[in-house]
Image: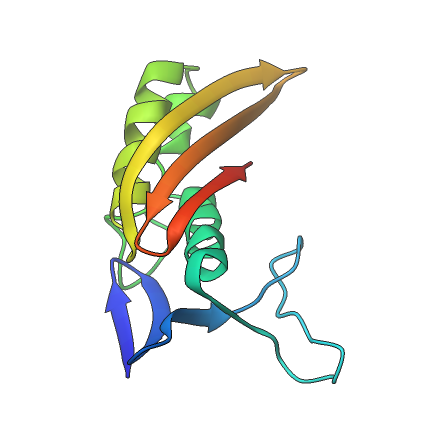
Length: 130
């Protein structure tokens, strides 16, 4: 069965946990060694969904315009690391399978905003960067 929660699609199979299509660093679908589309499951699937959730800009998803990161207000128009962190934590907590965001660090590196988040999920702990 497929589920949608706040603009994020994933598949849940009884006994298998969360599954989702794998994407590469360019957000293109990734093929496995066999040439078929690659599936991620468990903590890897949840981690990928977390990364894409933070990448999504508020208002860009037509059917979920109220979701996504308010980067215009927190990173581009006015740099506010506290507001960015609060928004990122809220976005991450809406991703299916996320239990808590245990740590979140943000910094500016030469005009680029970078973050690291340690996330506890139903399938284990993971760390994402962006």
